[in-house]
Length: 352
Image 1 (tube, rainbow, N blue to C red):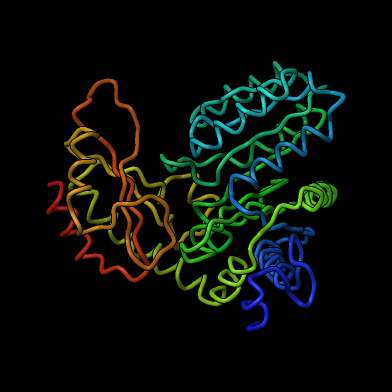
Image 2 (image 1 turned 90 degrees about the horizontal axis):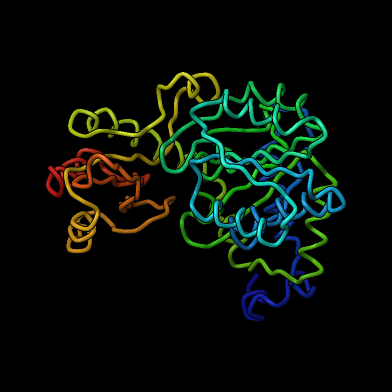
């Protein structure tokens, strides 16, 4: 390992380390083992340089698999996703004018069913969702997937599991084809940008892996080492953060309007009953500009987006309320070493 560091990541195991190494294989194996729990399916994975690269590769490869049928390809994506995902889907539409792209309301499943019926059974459909949506914490009804498979010639269900991680939720238990994760959060302890792709479709993974190899897309061994070296503490860190978030939720909901899915019927049906997401949204009596000003001029809570660290983070989040511009929403990540009572008092000091 010392020799590897001295050579500046260029070599590992005396091999040129561009897209492969034994370290890369070790990390992939850890993800495959994590997502294989509870299922007899074969799960194969790829580590990517970012979560967005993971999303792009999966969608692009599906389009490539059906390039002679572009006009019959439909990408259906939830109206509550990480904003960069929306932009990536729209970019792919610009590059592939023949494909069809539709946004659906995750809170009205009947409209999505109607959309499948309108599209017709000769279509190749990509359904893109998140396990718990960013930012509102909405959950898709996975029982609908089997029905949707009967309404399309081929259905690919692609799910972003970044908010939950494989520790709190395994989508492969619910007939999902591919899972993407950002590793910039929990998996790297909030220290490195990265992503991972996992799928039951071995041919899809093989094709993406070859594309990455041919393009020479590099994942730094330093990033891989960070994931591997902290893997044994991954479950403890996520569980600690989750339990602290649930504890804060019980207190915070008495003072603020909260968006947090724990306790919802779909959460009870599909997600681990003991743990909730490690992020929570709450509404304050300040407009977004005033909220940003308050956060910029304080040092009580780290003003930053993202999550996965030992300490808590807070940032403004745009959820437009056409009836009330005087209020805004804040997204809070509760660090796994946080003192919940102290954090609550800081929030009250800033926004009550």
